[in-house]
Image (cartoon, rainbow, N blue to C red; front, top):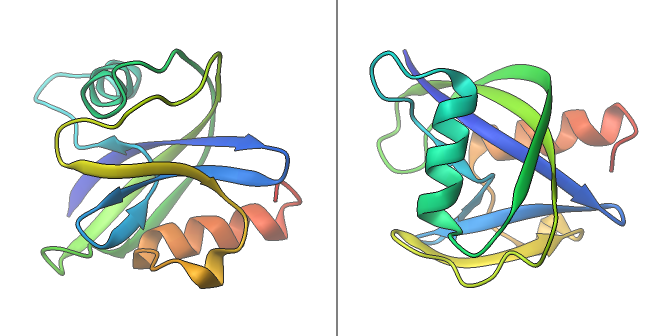
Length: 125
């Protein structure tokens, strides 16, 4: 099973999501060999949102779901974080970025939907 490291940035009951192709997901990505979760997040955030200044805080939870593009199983390790400025313009394979509250209006990946539902259940959203 592949692994991804993602960051949940919540502000005013909205969560920061990025759009990859037609699917909305949490920022982050897959770690390189011998890369820690934090190193992976720092690298991925810089690649996807190079203008943004993030603070990575504590680990939240692990989630297992189906990836939107390959259709295989993925384990996502989700960390909480904050943003010191606006997210800026997206880069690389990311075509949009925004804080979202009305999740039913967006096409979320399977695993992103699970994360959002758990964040709601736990009172974060």
